[in-house]
Image (cartoon, rainbow, N blue to C red; front, top):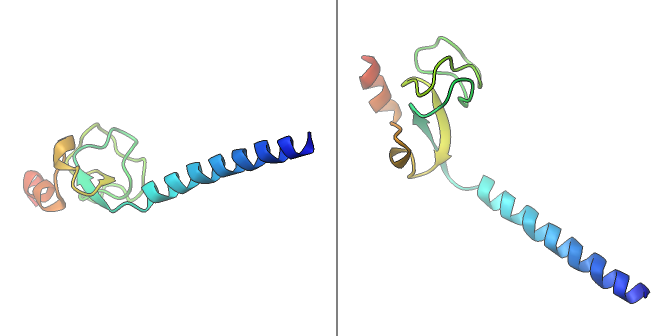
Length: 92
């Protein structure tokens, strides 16, 4: 009985370890700033216009000067812009 319990415990520990390793790999994936996709209150940091300097302070959905981190190479697919494109759109 004790051997069976050890096997089950080992299997559970291995499964948990694999799950945590997968999350760590996803967090380490290269990211880039993507402007114009953040929803109100869901931006990742300060905006281009300087009207706020913290995450979660975007006032409107998809504002050109607010940004979120996305996986590198996916910004355009999500309808976003680079910093240069956002500045041009804002007239800066």
